Image (cartoon, rainbow, N blue to C red; front, side, top):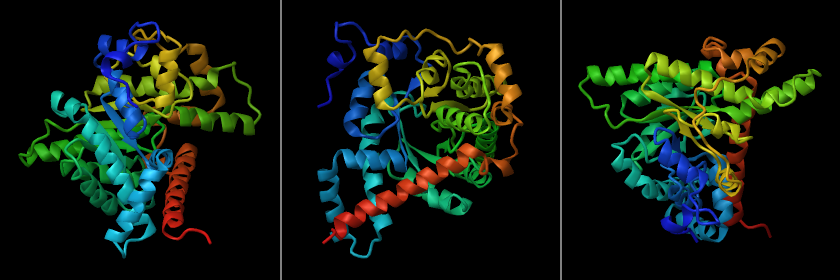
Length: 369
């Protein structure tokens, strides 16, 4: 069961947990829970979390964690919608899970006038080549609850959809995003969409876009490249690549005054949180990372302005062209976003999760003999 606020904000010795302290001392640094699982989200909220996210991988894990409940619900949905496909039924469950999580976040949404308290739901990755279809689904998801933010891939097609969705009043969260160039393209698309709304006399005050950089997935990819090519880098250097991209994107966003916040996701080490504390951005660790940070009493002072060691940056830049592509604001052209190594790996994983969700629904509807 989810603990109460008074109990959950303290550690085992009765002291304040590191995350509760961080969200109190650094209120600009927004903590999100990288799961829509209601029990986990309730606990994270007690530590100061003001947002959550859902994607095919996360949704599948949440459904499997409470399989009896969702199996019964799938059977009910199948009875209610006798012509619905496996995919349609699976996504109906994803939407219900998201609405439930959004309800938990509504107080933070109302308190912050829409800046926080968002539940992020991802568009179907099978639509990644069709901007118009992404926008249509974004509109459908945005109508589920007032505090929905919709995830759209940061590809050339997705950038087009992000601008149009923003113009239509939908707050967006870029996903399948690993580079400063992608984050900048997202922020520019949001600015164009917001400008169009303002020229049309439409409100923008309660919109709250974020541009994700999946720092850990960038680290994963560069480790693959380094191993494949037999490259030697200073010990631990490859754990700093995503952090470097996130810090550089944050600096550029602040300098240019974008109305989009950077979001750190895809944790592989606590650096993807601890190095960003103090910034006006979003940090979205998986629940297990939050538990580990609290259990270990990790100190979380402001480090957003602490630069990555220049020797590490130099080693990464000299050795790995893909790091330079990820770190520089002009490192990739929009036409190259979808073909970047981490983009291909992540899109495939999201598509595979979609297929696994279909298979789960199939097992419920047509059990094996």
